[in-house]
Image (tube, rainbow, N blue to C red; front, side, top):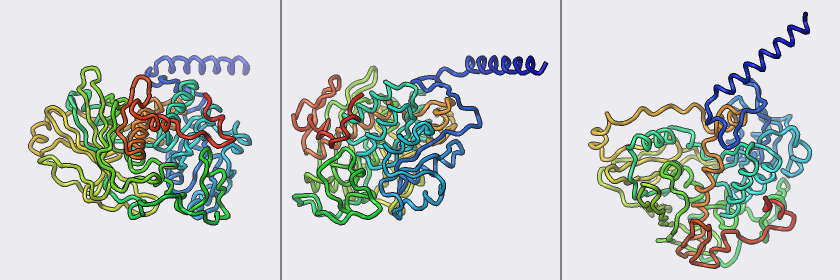
Length: 475
């Protein structure tokens, strides 16, 4: 009798699961993000690579969802001051300096990874994780070179059961749902120009731009594995101005202000206006241009062609403390944006114009901030006139971190998967090449080639990887 009852219960459970799966919305199964073996109460076994500064913030956010079980910690500078908080938070979790050794020893216990390392090192970690079938949350921008982003997208398509999410966290907040609703309702339409601006000071402001070499070698800290820190890059000796956020300053390592903030300002416009890749990037202004680190200020023009029934769009990017964009009549006042998380080296400081965008449609103009900040119609009189015609905007069902972990469990679809975040990241890669070379970039969108410069086209790929790192460039 007991065996028959158990068999009956198993049958009923299987039938219930089958009927539930049949009734679930189809969008949950897109892009290979299928329901997995996870039960509703089960957590995702998460390995965290990069545990200090922004990497530590990511770990806390993922852990706070209650959906992750932290099973491994990895950092090339383990036990340095900026890693101690996370080590104290998870004192009994295995620790590694080399992500390859972590996967070798614990691969069968890891279901997903968070990657909060410098821009250039996103690529090899992501490629190995995807190849091993691990879900990937990687901080923005996806990678440093256009080709690396291309390979990451290709790897994700080859492994469709792997869930991917780029860490532009505002893409799961109010601006995402508002922008989507307003486009669908025809409120945002016929956009022809977008101004994007980030005028807060950067780490390299004040550096001497008339340099002829990288900074001199310094003593490597005892806690740091400099060899692994460099990963696929080559030819650099340790200097304090390469690490702990300073990497963002250098063309060889980071993506500057554009790569850092572009994904927080232009993400929704790029997705919901279907911008894709530009056909031209023109460096209109480059103050303090040199061959090593980013200009003190930049104005870049990105031109996108007509897309279906949508007109061509020019996106202008402004960075630099005094490089302010023109402001339309009726713009009003923009205060310090409460949605901007503080940087790892201190509090957010007010700027003459805080990070954001101005979107010019045929009939309406919009202003917005960064991250999850919502848009408003300007001038105020026009906003009042439109108020009754605005659609109801749905609330976010999950923040960016919960969205990733729920997608790992088959409960949601990630909002910034590589098929969405990849082309956005490649836009910034092309912008960086214009900043680096000082040349107008003419780009063949179909062939994904720069036709205006052989040198710039070669930089789409960049220098060959360091010996021992070549395997990550094969999909």
